[in-house]
Amino acid sequence: MKLKPAKRMNEIPPSSTFKVLGLAKELERQGKDIIHMAVGEPDFDTPVHIKRAAEEALARGMTKYTPSAGLPELREAITEHLATKGITTTTKNVIVTPGAKHAIFCAMAAALDPGDEVIIPSPCWTYEPMVRVVGAKPVFVEASQADEFKVKAEKVQNAITKKTKMMVINYPNNPTGAVMQQGDLQPIVDIAIDHDLWVLSDEIYDCLVYEGKHVSVLSLPNIAERTIYINGFSKAYAMTGWRLGYGVAPVELIAGINKVQQASTSCVAGFVQAAGVAALRGPQDSVGKMRDEYRKRRDTIVKGLNSIGGFECTKPAGAFYAFPSIKELGVSSLNLCEFLLREAGVAAVQGSGFGPYGEGHVRFSYATSLENIKKAIDRTKEAVKKL
Image (cartoon, rainbow, N blue to C red; front, side, top):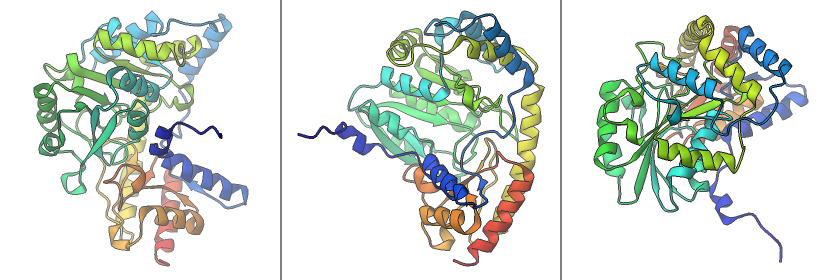
């Protein structure tokens, strides 16, 4: 008898982003010049004062295990930071995790039972594998380009069954860059209240809103008791490799999330958490400077993509992704991405990797230089002429 992986592994799709990245790296090894616009990673360096805080913590010997829920000082800094956004919470409601992704996974493991259904607006980031790993079922609803990629309450309502346990909200959105204001969010939150559902609100891009202000689900009335708020340091402070995130939830659920963390990663390194304290309590000017630069890049890439025959790009209001429609080209998003990678040396991610309603689109990350963006547009424009 040959041992095999668990059957549920067959239901979990591989990461589309890392698939593209792997092919891009292989082409680079062969000597091809690649412009990387696939991975959502800031091209800025972590601010100096944050790195210095980690160095000082290491020099103090901060290399031991830490409390599994996070250092009290960081949890306090998180509550202070959230208060500036109109969110009132306590340290008992906060857990620190190795990246926002792990906070999402632990929260789903703690909140969902096998057979529960989770409503996910699509196009969407890869929540599906986490849902499936814990034995729950993803139920996708369309957030269409015609609606500026904002999911409508009636579509959420129509997807609810007796098995629905949670809905996922991600704004500013990956991959579309859509942003929801209070008038958009409130009807959806009301549905969660009416049907007694968890709301997992992934707000990792809240610092990157280009018009207006970000509205947190957790700032809305009567929702805290059922909200799992997710955020982190990767996007705001260019700390992707540090792996530092956090969740905010009712105390009872935090206890469950902490059990999952204790059984998996134990805790976050102390010197990394010291850097997190410095990020939240230190100067915030780098966040604004990065946002201003991303805005310039957004305007450049949207104009450029809309100048390419067969592309139609809605201007994203947040995050750092452009998600143009390529339906007029008559090719699948996967085939187009492979073609652009080999023909033009431009790495983007196929829309089919972002749920069932992502097909017909391609995601370009503009977390790269203006020079690279302009070069990628020129290369893409010439390559598409050969289709």
